[in-house]
Image 1: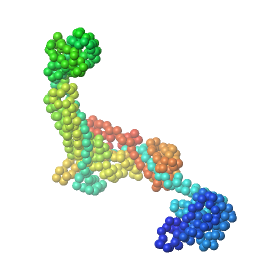
Image 2: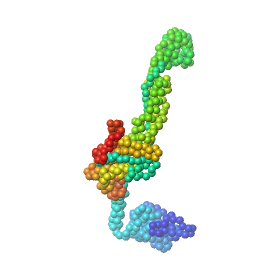
Image 3: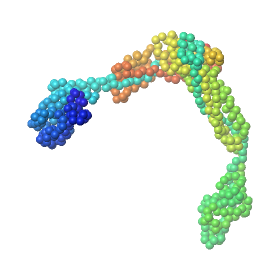
Image 4: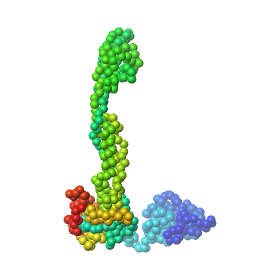
Length: 528
């Protein structure tokens, strides 16, 4: 159905019913008016669209378009023109004929007026002068351009604002049986968290084992009993003794017919097994040299063993004992703190499981170091980050009223005063909870400051107005020149740089304020 409710192109009607349809006849640039009129008469519908993609020379004249219009009236039909030719379109509008670039976009009520295709709708422009219509189209395009660059884009700002650290000592109760947070009673749900890490243990081996280190050599006599000289390449292989010991000839050797030549050979494998006795039986690996007889008047010598470090059974027992010690190590348990820096982990509930892998070498194998990979899984009850931040907003807000707690900056450390109640499945402990509060800035303030600004201007404003020297500003799509002028299309997120982790005198990990944080402003936490 057309936009004006008139005949549609390509609509489906019941058999014999063509009242709601329009026929399309396509003509070429040089088709005669009489031929066009004949095709209009043959069209089965009341409405006919003359489709001239490249225009038509006859119809573009005043006489040709009037003749087409008069013939359509006499035949009881209405016609429209679909063309990409400006001359034909202008001539048809002057005669009051509906015009469009494509047949399916015809507005049958637009006779003589300019149409504009916008979002699958064909709009009819006001019947005013050519310049007024051009101005209207330009204004409409300008409106769409403004909407595209000022409203359609979306912006995101990730800011690392100057912050004050607030820290306070509180006593909380946590249980995996609780589902909700009671910030008044400081009773919070807990859940089991875990981390997995693989540690490679290594011990120096204490055993020794004799190892073949030097290759035996032999002086061989080669006798050529044939009538032809034989050239033997260097590296040619001879086999001797029980166990098929292989020797390689030391150099290229020419043995003349009926002559005897002496040449050295070296065992392919080191060790004393190649020290064969004098008068050993020799054969050539390459059958081409079977005509040369080989003998050694002296025994082969030089193949030796030397002691080398090796794995002893005591080394295996030592490294396995070290692996078992990992399961009882407090230091190993603390890797859970490093893996979950934003959770309140109760190390008193921690359990460690170990899974040793395969030894790098068995007993008796030469090696100066024995290694063993051990997979460690540490699990414990903890108050997770989301719950901890909810508690922090409640207990720390009084120290910085009206300030914004930076997500991801909250931490909690046990002070050592922990009480476990296995019957109630409850942990009650004293923790030092802390976090960073943005100094004199809120996400709404940032959003209002940067809307409608370019990326460089936004960063400059954040730095000069709020001291935010570290900010990431992005616009989507990337070709947009500035952030949208509507704040609801700008996402603002505050973040903090990961704090450094120091150790106090007793070895407990503590979070040091980040580079943008001031000294603690809340109640100082006692040492553990």
